Length: 167
Length: 371
Image 1 (cartoon, each protein chain N blue to C red):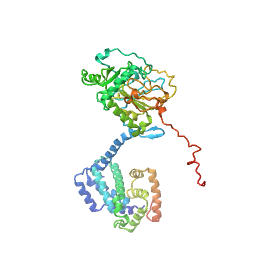
Image 2: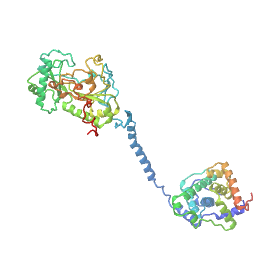
Image 3: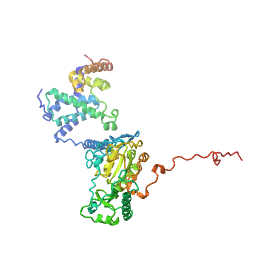
Image 4: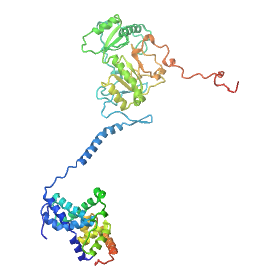
């Protein structure tokens, strides 16, 4: 993996290329809306660019981006303007569409989980983060992450009837 | 979970080209400075101003006192000067104590016997005249009806006649000294060598038994101060509860005020009335009403109770009831010729009303059926 400058502001194109799916995917899992995820994606990298932070290593930078993504997604979904203007279910882009039906089924099942279970499941299975990294990103204890993963997995299996699990 | 499926989904979870282009464009723009959060700063400033504004009010609230079972909000402001006072412990003696001393005047412990204004008596050649002997036994050294007192009183009456009811600014009052001479208090002037006033008074009194003394306040000033003190009980309940008696002492050229209790509120009010702290002499203590005859003053020559001083130092004959009455008294208006034959208590109208005679059939025995 190519080494990128650890100080925010440098090599932005490369950094965006490397982390855009991570940031956007988490934003999408958190907001359930592509438009909101696009907004969060822009806000996170703008904040990164303007922060002027120096990171210890790539893990540190990734953790910072994940944490900022969660915060920005929370801000977007909880803003009074958004709540006042367009209800989430009435938006045309509310449903995230994937190419394959199976993918849509998995995504819908994931969206049916509460946020407490949805984000750990997404970060663990889609982003392949360890429980330690998830704990750091969500600001909870690793034991809580494991518990949520277990319960979230059970709920997913129940919803998907075990069709896509190959643990 | 099916990894191929998740990888496929991950690839589809990428930002739209529009979002990426917009981000790239934003990144090329110069970094905007964060807007100054004026609202936040304004709120902080408002809170600070509120705290600063409330603090003096809180200080005033700390002055809450419990008087007669009711909480009274003092109007005393922190930092205001307080009037000095002396504590009188009963009639058998009193200890001087100056717990509260104003910023100016007062000045620590004040002894009753030394607090009297320096009389600085002067009378030119009049001082060389022989002094009448002290023949009296009452305070002031004279009996009512004594010849020296009568002579001085006549001079005093002549003086008042010339004033014709309007007290001049230079006149600080008058009293009879131990020898029965009329001592006229003259307000200190800028030119001590100017004896025109003395000559004028001597002319008015036909060169009688008159000497002169200098003082600070004119009697008109003291009477104006008396008016303000008289109005105080009506306007201020805290002051009313502690003000026992007050009157002008022309000899001492001041007002003597007796308080039953002392608090910062009345002391601050008095300090405002008497900025120099020498026009009002404040005594604090309960007035004794009994056993007057057996008392032995601890400070010789002074009576801890408020004197109702008349010209010449002649007081109304001591009587326990009179002391208990605490009349609001202005000594300047006493006239020897108008001395009451009876004490005030005796002159009071009867407090009780005679009951209707049993034989009175006008009302109580009226019977509507008896026709």
